[in-house]
Length: 87
Image (cartoon, rainbow, N blue to C red; front, side):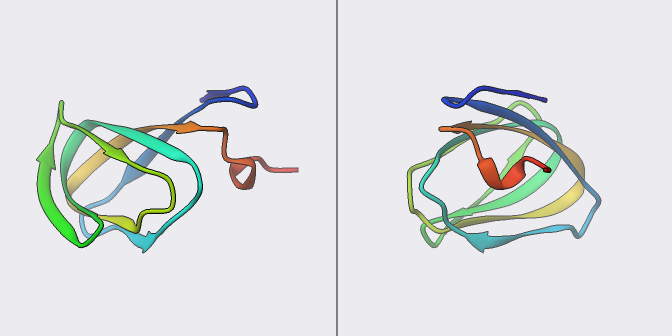
């Protein structure tokens, strides 16, 4: 959606059953659930979150998502995710 070297805002749409595979990265991450229902796992703890909920992922902590109902996540990363930029 928008970014600078220090921060990035990303919109990610999921269909029911979609999986954000467990992974980690050095970036801080804050995510807002714009719509839908997700099972969010952070550091082996899983919670069911829905529209309007927010979660935080510290640097280098394993995390992932499973979409339980079609939905959209708005992710903020610090610093920006260079791997998300297409050449």
